Length: 162
Figure 1 (cartoon, rainbow, N blue to C red):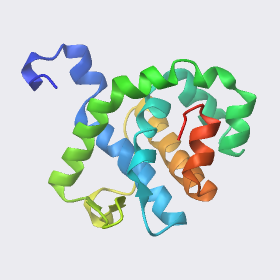
Figure 2 (cartoon, rainbow, N blue to C red; figure 1 turned 180 degrees about the vertical axis):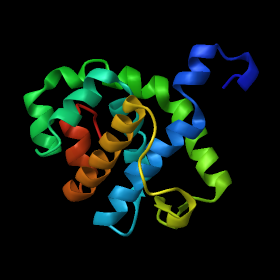
Figure 3 (cartoon, rainbow, N blue to C red; figure 1 turned 180 degrees about the horizontal axis):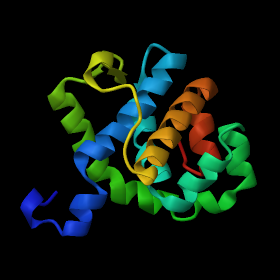
Figure 4 (cartoon, helix red, strand yellow; figure 1 turned 30 degrees about the horizontal axis):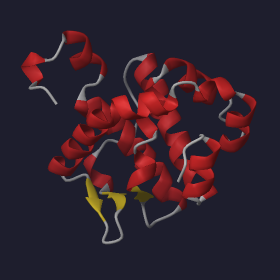
């Protein structure tokens, strides 16, 4: 990663580590509501590519009363460029996770799962309409990933080889 002051303004605004961390935190919290063990690290890397990309986010937000697997099956366009987006967003996800760790609002369990420290982040969702949408979709993904409960199924559905 480039130093903060050397990054283009657009990158600093769009991929702010505090905002990306908040999106990840919302997904981790929702996952823990279903599975107290916490989210596997590898699943956390799928949150930002699905939440920050407008078309995928809007598709998930529109269909949030359905199941994740059905949404992906009905909307294969969500998978276009997903591997590239995921790879491109890895440094930002790592940076956001680092910020969350530094603030003490997440911890890594001995088995490698990410767990939240609930008192560290405000529960209410606030911000611009777009940031609220990102946070709501992150919560949806966290809950759905936990209900599916099998990483292989999630990866296979998204076209990623486990």
